[in-house]
Length: 137
Figure 1: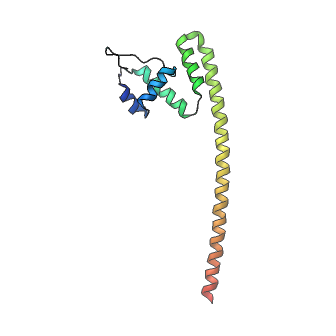
Figure 2 (figure 1 turned 60 degrees about the horizontal axis):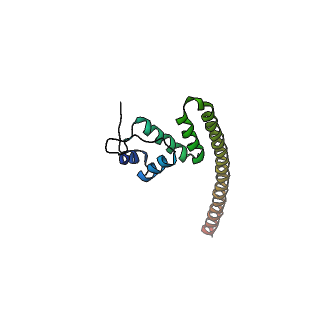
Figure 3 (figure 1 turned 90 degrees about the vertical axis):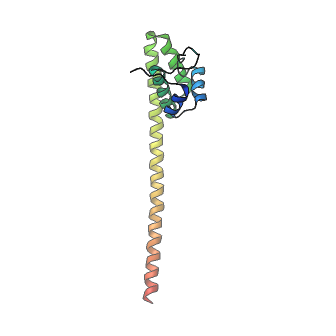
Protein backbone atom coordinates (compact mmCIF):
# COMPACT_ATOMS: atom_id res chain seq x y z
CA UNK A 1 0.00 0.00 0.00
CA UNK A 2 1.45 3.34 -1.05
CA UNK A 3 0.79 6.27 1.21
CA UNK A 4 1.19 9.92 0.39
CA UNK A 5 0.75 12.49 3.11
CA UNK A 6 1.05 16.24 3.42
CA UNK A 7 3.35 17.80 5.98
CA UNK A 8 0.28 18.64 8.10
CA UNK A 9 -0.88 15.02 8.09
CA UNK A 10 2.60 13.76 9.01
CA UNK A 11 2.87 16.36 11.76
CA UNK A 12 -0.43 15.20 13.23
CA UNK A 13 0.41 11.51 12.86
CA UNK A 14 3.73 11.79 14.70
CA UNK A 15 2.73 14.58 17.09
CA UNK A 16 5.43 16.89 15.80
CA UNK A 17 5.19 20.36 14.30
CA UNK A 18 5.50 21.06 10.59
CA UNK A 19 8.33 23.47 11.44
CA UNK A 20 10.19 20.64 13.19
CA UNK A 21 9.73 18.40 10.15
CA UNK A 22 11.15 21.11 7.89
CA UNK A 23 14.03 21.61 10.34
CA UNK A 24 14.77 17.86 10.42
CA UNK A 25 14.95 17.84 6.63
CA UNK A 26 17.01 21.06 6.43
CA UNK A 27 19.72 19.81 8.83
CA UNK A 28 19.84 16.33 7.27
CA UNK A 29 18.16 14.47 10.11
CA UNK A 30 15.84 12.93 7.52
CA UNK A 31 16.60 12.54 3.82
CA UNK A 32 14.97 15.04 1.45
CA UNK A 33 11.23 14.45 1.21
CA UNK A 34 9.84 13.93 -2.31
CA UNK A 35 7.86 16.85 -3.72
CA UNK A 36 4.68 16.82 -5.76
CA UNK A 37 4.22 18.78 -9.02
CA UNK A 38 3.39 21.91 -7.03
CA UNK A 39 6.63 21.66 -5.06
CA UNK A 40 4.87 20.67 -1.84
CA UNK A 41 6.35 17.95 0.35
CA UNK A 42 4.71 14.62 -0.45
CA UNK A 43 5.62 12.20 2.33
CA UNK A 44 5.72 8.63 1.14
CA UNK A 45 6.12 5.48 3.22
CA UNK A 46 9.92 5.75 3.28
CA UNK A 47 9.81 9.40 4.37
CA UNK A 48 7.35 8.55 7.13
CA UNK A 49 9.64 5.72 8.22
CA UNK A 50 12.50 8.19 8.61
CA UNK A 51 10.31 10.61 10.57
CA UNK A 52 9.17 7.81 12.86
CA UNK A 53 12.74 6.59 13.40
CA UNK A 54 14.08 10.05 14.18
CA UNK A 55 11.16 10.87 16.46
CA UNK A 56 11.81 7.66 18.39
CA UNK A 57 15.56 8.26 18.58
CA UNK A 58 15.17 11.89 19.68
CA UNK A 59 12.64 10.92 22.37
CA UNK A 60 15.21 8.44 23.65
CA UNK A 61 17.82 11.19 23.79
CA UNK A 62 20.01 10.03 20.92
CA UNK A 63 22.33 12.83 19.86
CA UNK A 64 21.27 14.83 16.80
CA UNK A 65 24.84 14.89 15.49
CA UNK A 66 25.02 11.08 15.49
CA UNK A 67 21.70 10.83 13.70
CA UNK A 68 22.71 13.38 11.06
CA UNK A 69 25.91 11.43 10.46
CA UNK A 70 23.90 8.21 10.21
CA UNK A 71 21.56 9.67 7.58
CA UNK A 72 24.50 11.11 5.61
CA UNK A 73 26.18 7.70 5.60
CA UNK A 74 22.92 6.01 4.60
CA UNK A 75 22.65 8.30 1.60
CA UNK A 76 26.17 7.27 0.51
CA UNK A 77 25.04 3.68 0.02
CA UNK A 78 25.96 0.17 1.05
CA UNK A 79 29.67 0.88 1.42
CA UNK A 80 28.84 2.63 4.72
CA UNK A 81 26.97 -0.25 6.38
CA UNK A 82 29.71 -0.90 8.95
CA UNK A 83 30.02 2.79 9.85
CA UNK A 84 26.24 3.07 10.29
CA UNK A 85 26.16 -0.04 12.43
CA UNK A 86 28.96 1.41 14.58
CA UNK A 87 26.99 4.61 15.15
CA UNK A 88 23.90 2.65 16.16
CA UNK A 89 25.91 0.47 18.56
CA UNK A 90 27.53 3.53 20.15
CA UNK A 91 24.17 5.21 20.63
CA UNK A 92 22.67 2.00 22.01
CA UNK A 93 25.47 1.73 24.57
CA UNK A 94 24.94 5.33 25.63
CA UNK A 95 21.19 4.71 26.02
CA UNK A 96 21.85 1.56 28.06
CA UNK A 97 24.09 3.57 30.39
CA UNK A 98 21.40 6.25 30.74
CA UNK A 99 18.83 3.55 31.51
CA UNK A 100 21.07 2.15 34.24
CA UNK A 101 21.47 5.63 35.71
CA UNK A 102 17.73 6.22 35.55
CA UNK A 103 17.05 2.82 37.18
CA UNK A 104 19.44 3.67 40.02
CA UNK A 105 17.70 7.03 40.47
CA UNK A 106 14.28 5.34 40.54
CA UNK A 107 15.47 2.85 43.15
CA UNK A 108 16.86 5.66 45.28
CA UNK A 109 13.61 7.61 45.00
CA UNK A 110 11.61 4.50 45.90
CA UNK A 111 13.70 4.03 49.05
CA UNK A 112 13.27 7.68 49.97
CA UNK A 113 9.50 7.51 49.45
CA UNK A 114 9.35 4.30 51.49
CA UNK A 115 11.11 6.03 54.37
CA UNK A 116 8.57 8.83 54.28
CA UNK A 117 5.71 6.34 54.20
CA UNK A 118 7.20 4.38 57.11
CA UNK A 119 7.68 7.60 59.04
CA UNK A 120 4.09 8.60 58.43
CA UNK A 121 2.87 5.18 59.51
CA UNK A 122 4.86 5.45 62.76
CA UNK A 123 3.40 8.91 63.41
CA UNK A 124 -0.11 7.62 62.69
CA UNK A 125 0.43 4.76 65.15
CA UNK A 126 1.64 7.21 67.82
CA UNK A 127 -1.42 9.42 67.23
CA UNK A 128 -3.73 6.39 67.40
CA UNK A 129 -2.14 5.31 70.68
CA UNK A 130 -2.56 8.83 72.06
CA UNK A 131 -6.23 8.86 71.05
CA UNK A 132 -6.81 5.49 72.67
CA UNK A 133 -5.14 6.62 75.89
CA UNK A 134 -7.18 9.85 75.88
CA UNK A 135 -10.37 7.87 75.31
CA UNK A 136 -9.57 5.63 78.32
CA UNK A 137 -9.40 8.62 80.69
